[in-house]
Structure formats: structure tokens, C-alpha cells
Length: 212
Image 1: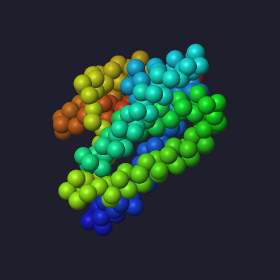
Image 2: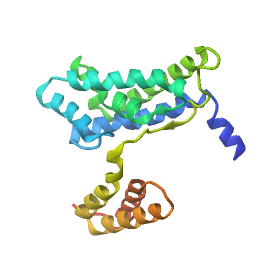
Image 3: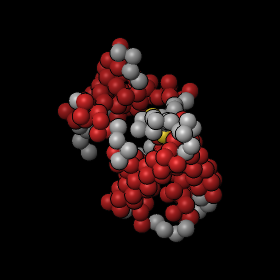
Image 4: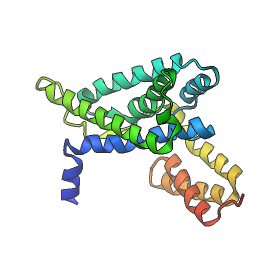
């Protein structure tokens, strides 16, 4: 366990972790582009991209989300936390795809395999930039915690668990029961209810799938 922890805390591991997360997030944007669901972000931020897809104007999504990405990349080495919400979910998931679509470069967003590869490459670059900025910071200014990635979260997160349960019940009764049980278990152990609800719904739905 100690060896595994040492590997995770190496500077060289950090870009790989960011690459994996970014690949999944960019692929989520591909799902939204193709099917209208699946983007990893707040509803109002996803709506910015949705407005661009409908009207062709990606200025709001590109400007807002890309600015977040740049700010979080510079902030990460200083505070020791790369905020997944601001940097990856918003920047990589919305900002960069919006810039690509506005430039007419649609292939990475349209193709699932290419979206995974594009997200991984972007994440790898972000990881190396964060580590590089940390290393060039004057002594005493940079943090040693850039190996830790968390989402800062916000007030809307507390309502996500119940909303997931309601959505799961609308999908199917087994999924709703799984979401409720998973959320209750996570609540018992002081963990985020949303995570338990999602896992519970996924587990029971795999045993009782909805036939189309």
C-alpha cells in the first residue's frame, strides 16, 4: 500500500491522472454533442454549449469556460489543488470543445474514440504545465500538494443526491431503489449522497435492465 501511495504521489503520475480524467470528460462532451446528454458540468454551463450548438455562437461557452481553465491551471501550483470542476469539467469539457467547434474543427467532438484521445492529450499537457509551474515557483510560494485533485464544490451540490434519486425512480423502480439505498448508506458514513445514489442505481440497474 505504501508503494502504491508513493507512485501516486510522484510528479510523473500527476499528468497521467489528469489525462485519464480529461479523456472521460471530453468523451462526455461528445455524448452531449451526439445525444444531448452526458456532459460533466453544471446545467447552466452546459447550456452555454447547447446554445452554441443550436445557434452557432460559441463565444459565451468558449470565453467563460476557457478563462476558468487558465485561472485554475495557474492557481493549482499555488494552492495545491487542481479544481476538477473549474479546470477540467468546465475548461476541458466545455471551453476547449467550444473553441474547436467555433473554429470548424468538429472531428474530436464528433468521434468517440478521437474525443477520448483528444481529452487525454489535453489532460496530459495540463498536468505537465501544472507541475512545471510549481517547479519554477520561488521557494516558499508553491505548494507541495498538486498531487491532490479535488472539486471545490458549491451550494448546488447538496441538492444533487435527491435529484439523482428522483431521476432514477423515473427511469425504473429498481434503479430508484438502488439510488435510495446507496444514498442512505453513504449518508450513514458521512459520504456524499450523490455518489451513493449513482452507484446504487447503476448496480441494481445492471441486474434489472429496462428492455427497449
